Image (cartoon, rainbow, N blue to C red; front, side):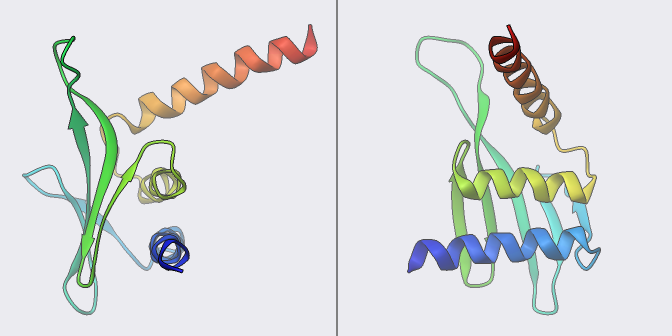
Length: 116
């Protein structure tokens, strides 16, 4: 039950963004924020660094609003919906375009296997 309700909140935020009811703005501390009737909702990427490499890469989203704080790792349904949300928001979120380009490449490689 919790999972369905959590995904429902994220999907509703995505739909409200798609239809223009939520407008996202960047803040100086790496969050993107949209105003609500009561407070705001904020999203940011969380970076992780592997022990055997230098540099951190984004691997999940953090989303926060009144009554709801969630982390959605890349590859989960929540993260996929948040990628869509940021696409609708048109905020140029760092690394999102890179992940979309990566999906394009992966799909292209798999498509060639099917057609060959």
